[in-house]
Length: 216
Image (cartoon, rainbow, N blue to C red; front, side):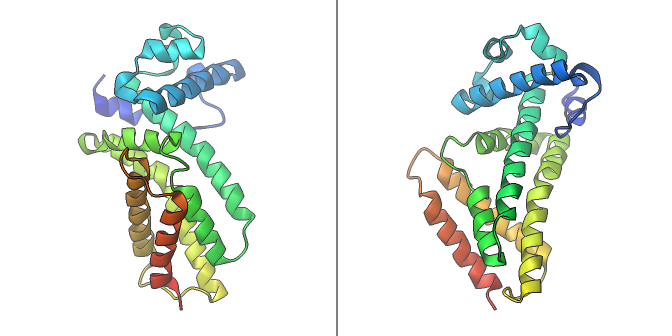
């Protein structure tokens, strides 16, 4: 199957799927594969991981794994969607417990940045990003996966404007694009093997940039 066709079949996590994972047992088996893939890709990177290793970690055969997925790239992207969905649910719940736009923005930054240099979600994002320049379907998939994060940031900015604590940027969409690009750059610094600034230091730097743009 051509790579573009494989990528087109990949979709974000759903509560119920048609086909192999449409039953409770099938969903549980599929989730075991995804958790095993998260662990192994975090440890070694997708290029060093074999389907047989994922199957062994999940307590299944390679044939059972390929019953749910079409290729190793399919496993990577579905694993990213599965992990990111969990991360976003936790982030949304955490943000709901914070009042005030400035505090929400600071919480968002802390949640967005890698928790550690071995953050599973971010390692999966980097593995997937490496494939995007050569596959427009993968690029589209990643854009759709990222949209809820950008929309959440836009909602925080809109809330700050309503509260009167933010000055209106020229365009909220432009601000979210610039700010998430800044956070992505900080994430690279956090994950690299050389000097790694602390997450608290990166949050301080990001909030300094936000204040320069949004403070009345």
